[in-house]
Length: 499
Image (cartoon, rainbow, N blue to C red; front, side, top):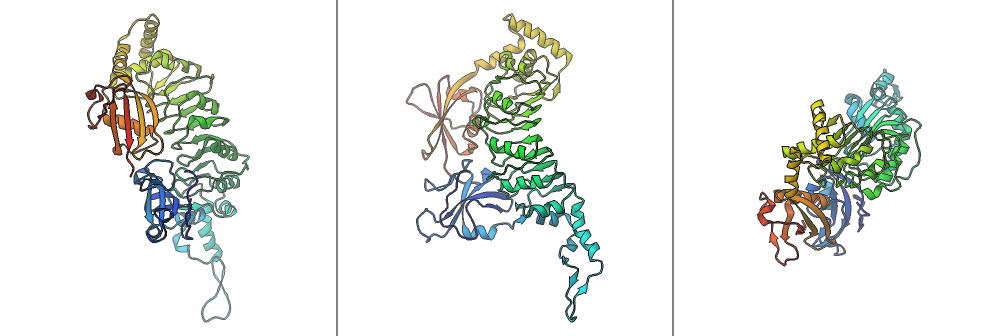
């Protein structure tokens, strides 16, 4: 989320603060009257961008005017300050959460001093067995190797040195789904805990990474999914960790442009699910040591590879809706440069003949493949693929390719113009190939992805052919697009409702 608006900051809540209400987490983007500058007569309102976009009612707007910005359209809402304060969940530090979860609760109120005062006695009394009690209270923490405080509303690490002293053997630490924002504090924690091999920060919202400290010992796993980090920040995290084997950067709205000047070394497993990446070659170049890359739910439209890669063994491409199906021999031919590729998970459209055609064509182009869509390639499939490739080179049609041709003839190229009903921000245009037999609901889902997670239910779609002045409303979600006789070059205007 971009720099939030600050209008009158009451001491009890701050712009940029992470809040938890029930099971919902969000970030405060605005504090002040509504409309802004309208005086305090209507009370103080708090604008919150929710992590779960479906909880929102608008995009930080009030009466059509933008009050604060959000990353995901439709993820914001306003709530009265007093109501928010009454409903806010209490927060905690990392060590407080660990103590609360893992220690003997009967001892949590035990004094930390062996000297106590007893009413009616003029001198202090030594507690018998205090050392044993203290060891039982804190010693439990010292034996922990796996610590998880996922969803405990942790707002910060607290005293890093104390955490290191209390958790000296901790190897795996899960801080996911909390309210942490200070990235530098987490880097300090990484450096202070040399035994840590796994750190999961998924679901926090991190910013302010400036530290350049680094551990001497690397880690097995670093989870940065849904944290809002950029590729450059992720690279700094990996460097601070002294190297990482598995890196999870899912759901960070990462785009291909962010890969410029980034080269992350040593990472063998890269998880990039549900981002906005369009260029496979750029991803491979940024992660040269990657053996497995998961690109599920991105925007890849081609599988071009500009650099040889001799270490990649697995590639997941599911739910890349921009990839035309079925995949053809030509569309995957450049993957031959991935010399050791043994496993490939392909997009599937749910039509058996199309999915079979994709599998056969891919195997014909990439005979080194051993696993496709988690199914091991049989010797018979490999023999069939060789025959298919020979026929393909000879310009002949094979039965599976004919199935693909039938699908291709059923596809049209449309211009999708996506804009908000209020007219702001400016409309965005996308060229998209779709099946005429797709339903309106399926087209809305595609538009929702292109609009950065907008709610499909609030969309209104209109279609016109060529330069016609007549717009037809696509008003039946379960109807196929061919009902409106759509054709190549047509335009679909997509209006996103303002909530």
